[in-house]
Image 1 (cartoon, rainbow, N blue to C red):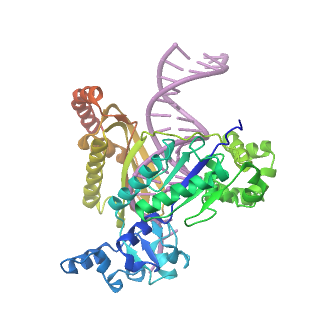
Image 2: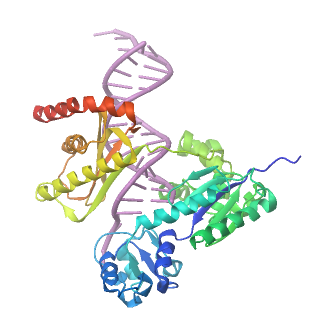
Image 3: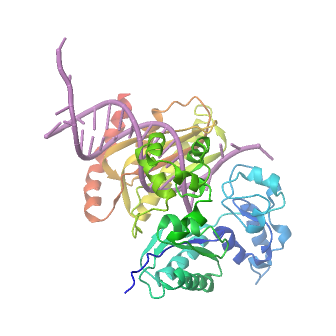
Amino acid sequence: MTPQIRRIAHLDMDAFYASVELLRYPQLKGLPVVIGGGRRKVDEAIEQLAEGQTRADIPVEAFARLKDYVGRGVITTATYAARQFGVGSAMGLMKAAKLCPDAIILPVDFEQYRHFSRIFKETILEFTPLMENRGVDEVYIDFTDVPGGQRQGGRALAKLIQQTIFERTGLTCSVGVAPNKLLAKMASEFNKPNGVSIVLEEDLQTMIWPLTCRKINGVGPKMDEKLINNGITTIGELAAKDEAWLVANFGKSTGAWLHRASWGRDDNPISLSSEPVSISRETTFDRDLHAVRDKAELGAIFTELCDKLAGDLQRKGYLGKTIGIKLRYDDFKAATRDQTLDVYTADPKTIRQAAGLCLKRIPLTKRLRLLGVRVGGLVASDGEVERAVGNSLQTSKEDLISNMFDE
DNA sequence: TCTGGGGTCCTAGGACCC
DNA sequence: TCTGGGGTCCTAGGACCC
């Protein structure tokens, strides 16, 4: 019996948000489209529709263009037609407007994306239960033992899954198959959109080593810059470095990890279930606010964030005990404060009070562009815990109030 | 015309306990 | 007038990812 080769696949929906929108607005197919704003224009156009007409009947001229957009925000997704202009994810809308002023801009609609995300994942689960979630549009799966998983390096099965997803959703995805998650993730980028790529152990030198270090999942802009400053541009150059040298320059854990990654080694398992560690809400203001001059406005936003966060916790069934806030100043520097309570809570007033105390501990001289509230130290809010917390909630609140007077 | 909104994980120092 | 060593929790910041 020949030993099974580990087949890990990374599946990644192509331009997910934008592609979902194109299903509703087929008239935009082939045009540069970005997701991130323009809600008012779309709402107006929908209102103008005659009886029996759908979104597909909205004339192309009725959509908002990037050049008409004013305000803060970034692009979450761009169609491939828009990417031709150099427009891409996480780019500021103002900058994108310069590159492609006539691109159509559509608002995000998470409900739609969640719907298609569910079909995407349910389809995959019909092939294997060994699936790890990586957000709405990405998963890792292990199909080592799935019938057909060993054929053609996994290509046949990967294509079958990809085809089934397309039949169910009308959306394409890209698939990378490799012996581990690290390589599978890189492989899925080789052939976008709608590609299938196989990377075997013996392909390391030819397929992986020529890539830049930035292609390693976990190497971001900072680490990449540091590597380049040390004369390391490609993964091959990284692999040529002594592990001891990497440890000396990047620390024990990161150094050792960089060495392993450059040699295509990764033994992280597929993680089947994940409980959240924290839940948060944050918002960037339309204009920078001043703690004193805009106190009322800031206070109202603060309370609203806490209310929404408490709603999220309750809806998702969690209680938390570490309450934190996050600020971003006009110079984009961030500050955080948090406080661990002696009880678990999902109560908006308790969260608001604790977050208020955190806010008092931060200097507020600079103007603010963002405010966020976070609850960590989560536990599921079923039976026992909830009762225990219910009893101590009052005590906890009174403590907080007396703390405020103590100051 | 810079830079959204959710998240995770790591590091590092201090408190506190044994 | 000495001062170890380990473990855990808390807090702040930062890198990174989708």
